[in-house]
Each structure stands twice: as C-alpha cells, then as structure tokens.
Image (cartoon, rainbow, N blue to C red; front, side, top):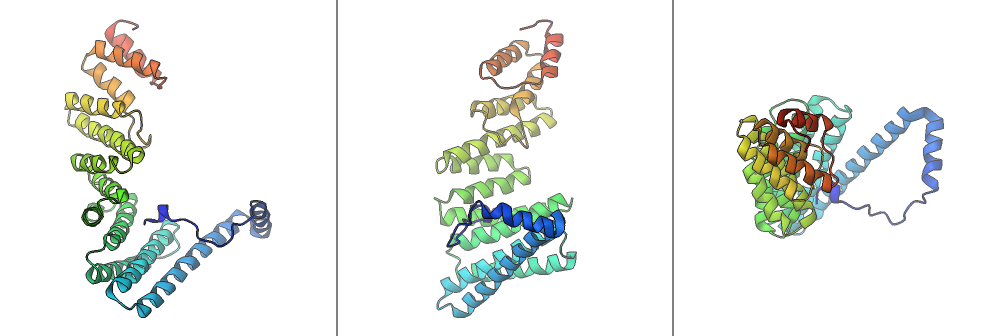
Length: 290
C-alpha cells in the first residue's frame, strides 16, 4: 500500500481538545519554526524506527516470503526518508542518493526473494515514482524513473488484477511520460474496480491528450478528446487540465460557431463556469450573442 493509503494504527485516539493545547505550548516555546522542526524530527524518527523494525524482521524471517516482505518494508522506509528529507532540504544530495540506493537495494532483494508477490513490485514502483516526481520538480531527467515505475506497476497489476491502485499508479506513471494512449487504457481497466477514481482519471487523461493534440494542431482530434472528458461528467482533478474552456477555444478557432454556441448553452444548463473573455471572443468572432 502506498503511504496515502495507510491508516493511523495507534491504540488510542488523541483528544481533539489536547492537540490545540499542545500546539499552543509549542508555539509559545519557539514559534512556528520550532513546531515545524518538531514535526520534521518526529517524522524522521518514525521512519528510522520503521527501518529498525524491518531490519529485525529480516533477521527473524523464517521463509523467503517473510524476508521479502521485510526487505520491501525497509526499502519503502528508506525511500520515504530520502523523499521527505530532501523535500524539506534536511539532507545533502549525497545523503539523498545514498538513501535511495539503499531503498532500491532492498526492493531488488525483495523482488528476487518473492517474484510472485504483487506487493513487492508495487512498493518498488512507488519508490521509482517518488524519485521521478522529485527529479521532475528539480527539472532533471525524470523519464527513466517513470519508465521503471510503470514496469513495476504493470507487474503488480498482472499479479493482482483486483488491485485498482496498481492500475492507477501505472496510468499516472505513463501520464508523466506523455503516454496518454497507454494511460487511458490503464484507467479504463481501473474504472471497473473503482468507478469514482477511474472516472476522474479518465476524464483528466482525455483532457491531457486533448492538450497534446492541440499542440500538434490536430484540432479535430483535440475536440473529440475534450468532448470525451466533458461527457465523463466534469470529473477532472481540476489541476492539470480543464476541458470546458479548452473545447470552447477549439470550436471558436475552427469557426464551428454553431457547435460553440451549443456547447456554451450546455455549460450554462449544467451550471459549469466558462471564461467570460472566451465567450466574448466567440461573440465577436461569430457576430452573434447566442
């Protein structure tokens, strides 16, 4: 399971009244910077504890499957420590590379010990994904990491065809490398397992592919992809792509004014926001108000 899916496994829930008092006390002691450092140190100690427990698990394992799981767990902890510490500039580049190398070493051991396990492939794919997103943010060559991630998520999906997150992460990895056709196939497989998430991913992927079509000046194909995105029920994540205004631009630029106005009315009926400047542009280009 990736870290977004983990649940807190404490034996007792803290009172909602206690946290504000604790936070207030920390603020009085040292201000916001102090609180941030406390949280960061706590997170790193937790990951070091995970590494220690996994190391003990490796030593105590009685079969290959148990040992593989312990290596995979430790690899995930090393990778998360590298990702987290680098994100907050808590370690040097050399230490980041060292931790990530340890993570991959453990993940490779886990895969070698239990190649039939979907989990060990998924966890290694997550480590590759995290490295790819880090290099993407740092404007480095991220593609090889997402290629590796996609290969592992593909293996995980084959070994556990009911794991919708394997298809989800596979699609996301391919998205990052601009492989929209493949991502759409992955999300289509996810759709039957998790309709809500699958629909959102598909809507966003069609919109993203539409943007790629538009950059190639293949506006007819772009319009078809934007339409598919809209038809999925406005379920895009709203971050990377927004199909409504993009489709209005395509219809206006290709002088398909009847389609453009029909689309404007559809958007109005569904109470979906359209950029007023784009609607004004359509009015001027078409010489009409509706």
